[in-house]
Image 1 (cartoon, rainbow, N blue to C red):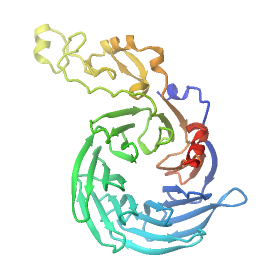
Image 2 (cartoon, one colour; image 1 turned 60 degrees about the vertical axis):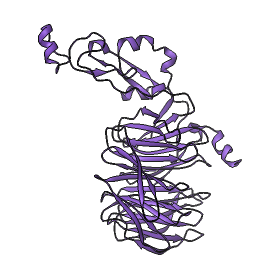
Image 3 (cartoon, rainbow, N blue to C red; image 1 turned 90 degrees about the vertical axis):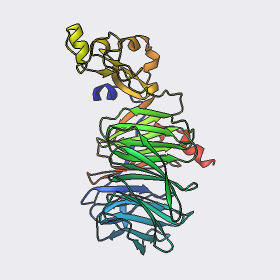
Image 4 (cartoon, one colour; image 1 turned 45 degrees about the horizontal axis):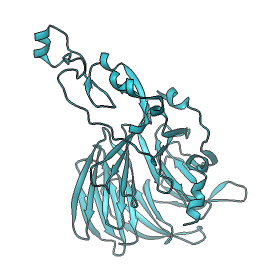
Length: 410
């Protein structure tokens, strides 16, 4: 399966610009500082570091600050230079970074959770700090008073978070594979809907407020696009990774989705094309092609004196079929299948060569990617993970040379 993907010719690749080393434990988050040659990292080694690029071309820490507990996540607001650090002990610490990025002052500590903070978002518009944690909760706090405004508890770990600043909707992915959409108020909240589609824990979310699209990546190796703004329940399934998806980012200008997985895979999906929804898998007691019984259909097995067969599903039409009637494999990128998947013989016969044209490119980051951030205006991407290395990439060849130009004109 891996050979199938990586054997494709790659005309444009991410270019590794720099590697930042020095952490003694996993780097859980890294963000690029807008309009600066700088990166902010937080790590399991309890450090918050601001790295600035020197004349030598190397990055050196201009700020090296140690806190009391491992740093699990962060939210950085560049215009106000406020940074919020989630910790393993459940608290969130706020700092104010100086204009020259050489000093950082403690502002406030928020008792947000009873266990590790998994994700957080700072909203300047409402002066709210919204966070999720391994105590199975979503909390939102007032950054002016430091007081708790509200909390919602889930049945399992809340693993990732996105927030719409305009409408105050929160999207929370959890370890059960669900994404919950909530409407937050100052003293109350309501659950809008629960999105179910993943077969593994949700590890990454990205919200595009312009097209009102939500993207989720999970341990089932897949990415799902949820069309929230369309209000028709439309979803698109994207399958091309071979490990759990841990970071995603949608580039609204170029209509491209970038997703990163635990094995270092970096996928760039073309979303500026007409895609089809994958069908729902149908239920049946016998093959919907040859009508042979499946192994649990005891009555038909007895009546026909035949052994039951194992049930499979065609990824293109969704029909329940036996192995003999679905012996073929094919890619079908228009439905998000970028590597060969099971299809029934009838569907295989009508899939044309042009239908197999890839709608995504795949690249190798060559390290575990637990977190990723992008600066679209410069075409830069930063990745980090459990190998304690931070990598800075030039993505302009991959996402299109017009990317930086388009942003500079806005």
